Length: 390
Ligand SMILES: *Cc1c(COP(=O)(O)O)cnc(C)c1O
Figure: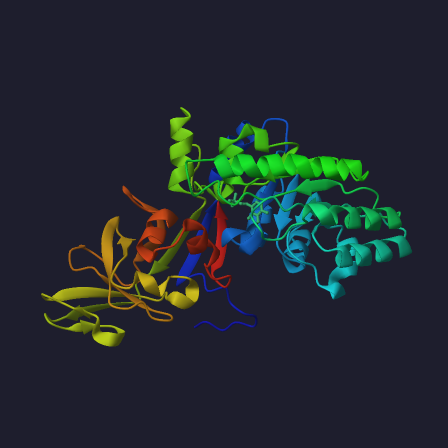
């Protein structure tokens, strides 16, 4: 009998394993491209679906990691609660009510609005605290970022508050580095960046550190590294794209730099024999052509197994491919085990990861679902139990 006083971790039906060895290796590979630079690990989006608390745990002892970068104040606080004492950079917007939390949790916000900068300066002056900020510069992605003619306004605010001093960092983000092997646009953005840094210098707000490089730029472009790199996806063991991998190969680079950190597993909760011509799941989109054996897996699109994978993907059972039949449901899906011997009730199944010689990578799932590996990982439900393995 299972009687729980507190919420039980649903360990038995599905779980995620995180490899400490893999993340250490990936960081080692990435830092070898950016020797002597500050190294920031991007743990936004629940650490790309890996679990922010567990990921911070895996990074706590790693002396190569100087910074964590997050999107929200909520994520920043989770990092602090997980025991992270080093620097945290907050990339996204900060709500007005969270201004004091920047001071309380010692967070370094990336700034792109004068209103926010003014607020934080006012509060920090009041409490006699120093704040490190990073100015985000617009160089051609046209997302968050400060355009050239507004830099002067920011300079005025920086000068108004003692607590702000000069911006600690200046940053930008490339629009087209992972999607192509042609890097002209990245070169253009780099020139813009240099130009805007000069404008900052003219207005006497020269930053101490400059940072522009995500994983692709860290791997491919030494001249984007400046004083710090801030990779995400490759820390978790994935190439940002096929094009990044190809560019790296064309540059004569070696493979086997990265190893996926995450494995997603579940169990068979029912085995069912069905006749020929039977329909499986909603909408009767799959019809058996012969007598078949179907395994029910208690995972669905709620957990992050994309409904677009209906009738397209397979999972691994006993090291063999078990095709998903019919629609993926909210909490369940059906896998064909007709040709897999010795499947038992509660047999383990691998949804993402390696089993014997077979590998289902986030890239493969992304191809099936017509999206990118980032999205497959980031959408893994935060509710899934996660554990670190060595
Ligand atoms: C997400 C993000 C990164 C990391 O990008 P990857 O492609 O995952 O390495 C770096 N910088 C900024 C501003 C980001 O938003």
